[in-house]
Image (cartoon, rainbow, N blue to C red; front, side, top):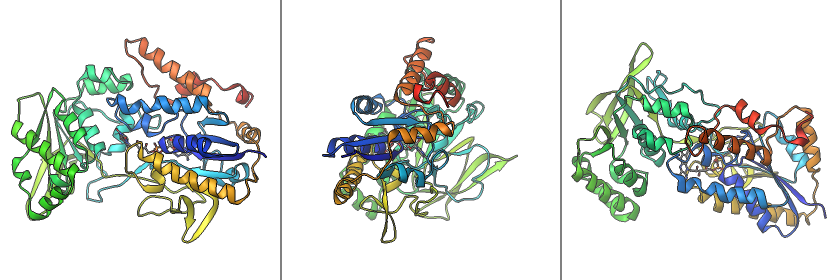
Length: 450
Ligand SMILES: Cc1cc2nc3c(=O)[nH]c(=O)nc-3n(C[C@H](O)[C@H](O)[C@H](O)COP(=O)(O)OP(=O)(O)OC[C@H]3O[C@@H](n4cnc5c(N)ncnc54)[C@H](O)[C@@H]3O)c2cc1C
């Protein structure tokens, strides 16, 4: 019987888990091609998870083992689905196509002044410090300003706040590019204000992330004790939620600790709704806030840099249904669907399926649901495959001159990153220009004739 062939779009956690589980769970032979628009695998584990979180980044080691040790599994980096290859073409070459391409956009606040210079989505800031090839080197100049605000109280907001106050030796222990280390070294920002729309009891970041902030030695973390006096609703919410109770208890300790006279400050403002950004000569100079519980009480903070951290968002792909409100692809049991009609052979996994929530491991459970549906559909067809072969896909890519980065080529990029680090006494430095990655990759032999 010819193998079932599956294309997985995206090599982030949901794509990697889908590929792994397909090969583990299938009782008949299966071949999986994992595509990524970037020359590098692992999605937001490489370009999202904070560089000073090495323990979580180490999931890369187990994904690497999967790619290296699973027969019939290929990585095809630097191939953008929707640009280099269409969905219709994929459907002729594969029995199943899984969209696991994440949520590459962001929600806006929808308030006046949001397009002023100096205001960005936290996604752009994260991409910049992570050396994402789509982000320009000088996207963030941190010299000259004093105060940054981060609007939002999720883990990503805390990552951004923490990175803004990290000391240079800590940064040099990570793999972020040298131009980013230099920009942070030149930073004059000494206060970061984190703004939450509701009270502290509803904050979305974890206790662990908040404790990590308290451990940054250069920085005071300030919580106003008055914010910890809850109304009945907030108190009931906290009482009912163990995670919120733990966090509030840590907030209380932070409020008691107060200022230790440190060089930098991260200050939390809760119960504040941003109503407007104000600016001069096209650049932000302030943010106007209203008390959420009493909108007649307003204040304006001077601001030099503003990051909105109110959620990542999926984007539509040609030929696929899309739910604009949730920013996800609608599905029935992971099968892409328009209303009650399933699009045959097309599936979803990860953030594009369920929205931007959960930790890396959440994508494993999500991918397992997807794999279960795929294998049920394969079984219902009696295992018959209607796909073409891996060689046919390679011909299409070669004819189009797509410079495919296969697994060996990615390992060459990795080696170049380790060599770049060694040259300046760091463990590793990410290559951040696509052309440098492709040069380090040098084309895989089967694509060399393109
Ligand atoms: C800033 C940040 C920090 C985080 N920190 C943590 C943390 O500390 N701990 C934790 O557990 N979780 C963390 N997460 C969450 C975790 O990263 C996500 O749960 C996970 O990455 C989602 O996986 P995914 O595969 O759905 O999407 P992604 O990881 O985004 O992967 C999608 C992949 O698809 C590719 N792609 C997109 N479009 C195309 C296309 N057209 N063709 C081909 N390929 C395409 C992208 O290049 C990308 O590689 C963090 C997330 C963010 C944003």
